[in-house]
Length: 587
Image (cartoon, rainbow, N blue to C red; front, top):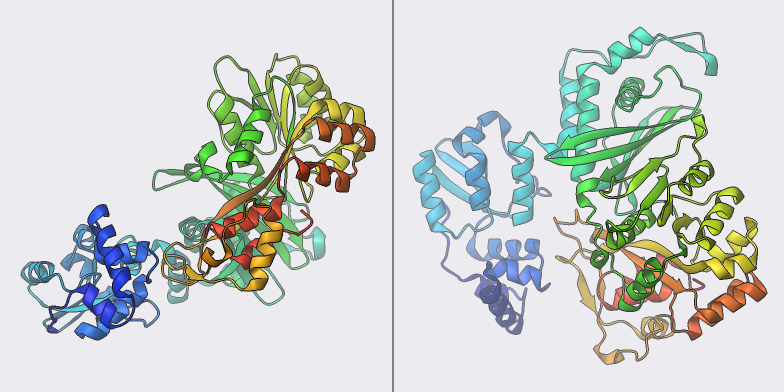
């Protein structure tokens, strides 16, 4: 076993110039207060990454560094190491057996200086222990993969099983050719239930959920198939299935989402409900025919990740006050705008969850119902049987509602009923697709709503976007240059503005926790305008004059989306590039 020198981690990191002596003192203080290991305190304070600490310790004490990148943090699966060191012991002590070499057992450890654990391992296994150092995050991920059968690598495993097996790739047989080809349904059903197809689909869904994917894209081209996961708003490629397996996989997804497996010429929409590790996951499935085959997109709705807590939305004090002021009115219209997938529905659900009570009758009409809320009557539209937004709204008004949520205003009839309901004593919440909050007003005028009605019934318009949040474990501070400071001063609409000499911005780094992207999760940014008397007068006299509306809103102290983005930069939540890439200087 390698002889480990008795050097303290703080001394190692200062000698290696990973941290300064002043940072060490801060970390020691945080360690004492938080009851954590020194390395964890250093990472939490942002002084160094786990990887930098592990590499420095490796060089100082002569213990090899193991990681996924250098291919050392990889378990030799043929040696039955799970029988030598069980999963509980590995997790409790942050270690992972790597391989056996004669009478030596190689073990990756987060703390290779822990002599008690090393001695216990030697007694428990009967082998001499050769320690390697690895980061805590990579060890935990490797433990998940090794002991649970490789959940985050299930797609690779599914493909390896296929390549090593005797079965040939399945092929969907058709009679005839072209878009009117008739499918042999018996053949399709058999192929869709094949073990390799089931394994791949299960692996794909589990891996997407494990990687926090919001959407799964599976598509075929002339010579290849692609599989992509949308993670934090960006699409990343993953290992796709072979092209000859693709038709059977699409059929399997159709079966799970109760769609017509014989229909390949028209788009279809369905849903899958699954349970994974005590979490209820809903998948919204959309299948669209293309010239090379059917394209599948699945939206992942993780009910366990939706807290619906107004304090978790990321609203600033003025925004929270304006939004709740409108939501607590006895009647009126409240619109939230933004692109698909920007979190509009989650914000509306959160508002409803905040204001609901036994004294209030709340009804919603949605397409689809994304989350089921206790104490709220939710209706799913079904256009094929005549249950549309407009027809449901007419029925709602006979159900004695106090508050109505309309999933989306898409047509003049729905817009008209919403306005009439707001003017006859109901609070109506809904969404629109516009580029900014105030553009909702000309959009409603275009849908046929008279400005005098809009000025009476509309009380709040809001818009939101999602920006990627910097990974707290590896984000790097820097002093912004004069150009960035000037842009921030002009566009953040902060008064007073902080002292430029004290400002720190952050940019992405890259670590195991964020899969080397530098970002971890997304945060909402908003622009929220409570329609005060001055704005009502502009709407009444000038209708949808957005330029004039913006000028009046700015005088009242409200700020736009770009200003919200800059404020998130100042808070260290996101980077300058990310903030500017999702907002416009005009909005």
